Structure formats: C-alpha cells, structure tokens
Amino acid sequence: MSEPSAVEDLASYLRELKAKTGRSYDALAKRLGISKSALHRYCSGDGVPPRFTVLEQFAKECRANRQELIELHRRWVRAQATEAESRVARQDQERGEPEWEERDAVRSRLVAAEPEDPPPVIGTRGRPAILRGGRSRTRPVQVVLTVLAVLSLTMLLVWPFESGRDEGVKTAEQASVVSMTVGAHSCTIRRGVRHVDARQGGHVWSTDFVCANRPEAPLYLTVDTTEKIAILDTPKSWFVCWTFGRVQSDGGNIWYYTRGDRSEPGKESWSGWGFVGAEHVDAPIHPVSAMPECEFVPVPPTETGKPRE
Image (cartoon, rainbow, N blue to C red):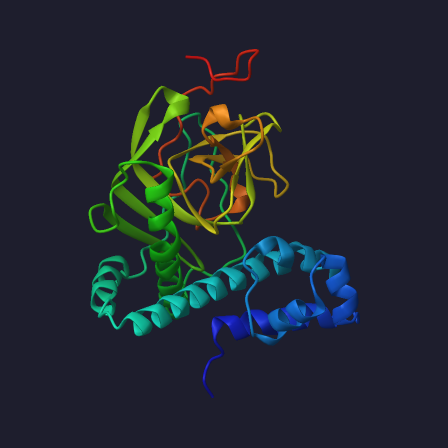
C-alpha cells in the first residue's frame, strides 16, 4: 500500500481533530469565518489553506493541545511544499521547457547526509540555548523527505521573495548554500547574499539562515517590548542573527533578527527590520546552529518614531 501524500496526510489529521469535537463542517466553518465547502476541501485533501492561521484557529476550535498544534503545522508545511512543487511541474509541462535538469542539479547540491546532532550552543552572555524536545533525531527516511519538501519551498518562495525584498541579492546559484537537517526540522545557510540593513546604518549582511516559520509571525521593535513593526507573510524566511529577550509563550527566550514582508501601519520608517520569537521559527535547535549572536544594541526611536542616525 503506497504512502499517502503530504496533502492527504494533512487532510487525515484535520479529520482526526474534527472528530474529537463532534461538530459539523457548517458549524466549524462559521466559527472560522470561511465557507463550508472550503473547510470540506481542506479535510478531504482537495486543497491546502494558503495560510496557517486558518488551521491554527481550527485547532483551537477542536481543543487541540500544543503538541497537536505543532504536528498540524509540520504537516501543513509539507503539504504546502507538495502543492507548490506540483504547480511548478504543471507550469513546466505547459511551457515545455526542460527545467527539471537544472532543478535536479540544485537539489543534488543541497541534499546531503544527515549530520550528527550539533553540540549544545552557549550564547556569548553565558546563557544556555533552549533545545526543542520531544522529536526523534534518527529518522533518515523522514529526513530525506523533509529536505525535499523544504527544498521546493526554498526554490519557489524564498529565492523570488529575496530578490524583491532587497536589491542586489544574489541568486540561489550564485550564493553558497549549505543545508542543515535534524529530525523533522531544517534550516539552510546561505553565504554570498546581500541584505542592506537600513536600521543598522546600511550594514550589509552577507550570510543568512533560511528556516520555516509560522506565516503572519509578528516582528517587534526590540526583544523586550510588545511594539509590533512588521509581519512575516511567507512560511519560510531568512534570519541573520539571534539574541536573548523576554520569555515567549512556549517558555523560550531566543529571538531572531530579520526583515518582515510588510510593515505595520505607521512603522514604515524601520524598513521592516525587527525581532521575531523563536516560537514562530521551525529549527532543529534554538538558537540555530552556527548563527551568530546579534552584537548590536537596538536603537530606540526618537519622538518622531524614526530610527536615530
């Protein structure tokens, strides 16, 4: 019997959660603010929600616990990758262009053997990093499948998104790329990129770390405040450094510095640069192995709300 696809796997889990409530599609759909037909498509494997927020609310309505919510997000990321790869395959077929050879060449450079577990990471301030527990780190078959799923998201979402978000960013072929995979999580190190940080006086970040993240994750002005300045729309983003900050809802205290996809109204002067909690980032370990700690001190705004020079 063949293994179910990632989309079918997600649909099966949605049905499992729904069965716990005993509520109808119509009742749940009204609570979610979507149509009954849309919810039925998601639960039958005929479609994948474009954003996780719908499924997050679905899980809450089904009274899912934290582990079930994490598992739901993992399956949604894989289903998104499968959907995206299918769309590209259909487009290639329609154009009749032999692009699979180029894609296979990129894939062969990224897919590597599963690395050993990284050593515990200690921040420069002496505080221990927080490990994500409860996942097996010795499942090579799952690792290969996850790498392939993440690769498709990387090619389809990250590279085009990067070129639009920062001028002068190098392409995937020009940048040096290293894939790190442990268990069901993965991040990719890219060297040779170019992110101009307007918030840090035009500093250029030449290395970043691409990881899956929860869509619509908020970015904050500093790690100690609740002032939102931007949003991450895509399910995969790049990050340049990490730091310690206020404790998040999952008990972690690691924060990542990146640039959001869109600024909050009135916060455009920060150019989208801010901090996102590690609870929104899917990585094998927090902080991400080999990522540098942020050495700068966030500059508070002036009375006009603009960054200081």
